[in-house]
Image (tube, rainbow, N blue to C red):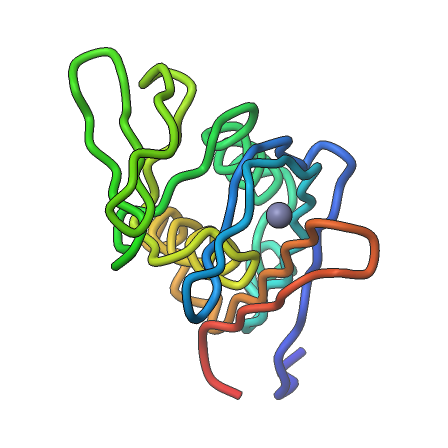
Length: 167
Ligand SMILES: [Zn+2]
């Protein structure tokens, strides 16, 4: 049965969550205080069918990867490494954080996730998770997956969606 057209598969599970602390900076000199969210991730893959298996990508595998990516940042303080204003310095077992040149926080290193993003907004978290998922898919040789759409929600009805791929 040869038919043209692509498929979409989505995963959003109760365990695709991460409870993390963060603060974001805004244009100008505004900066939030430290607080937390129960983030939730939702992912959609698009692509052609694997004609041996009749799926785009194995759900079991996708859930496993997504759970690992969420676990990596769960129960941690999320800190941006590419911010102009937030500077993160590792000193042995601790991490010192300054904002606009002023010391702000000191955290145990093991309680922090140092992320290669400029600000810990949901948009940047969605992009980061997408890039990490794409790398995992590439390692598995999942070239049939042509697009990834990642939604990260930080509060009910407050989320960002990032799309990587054509369309
Ligand atoms: Zn927040």
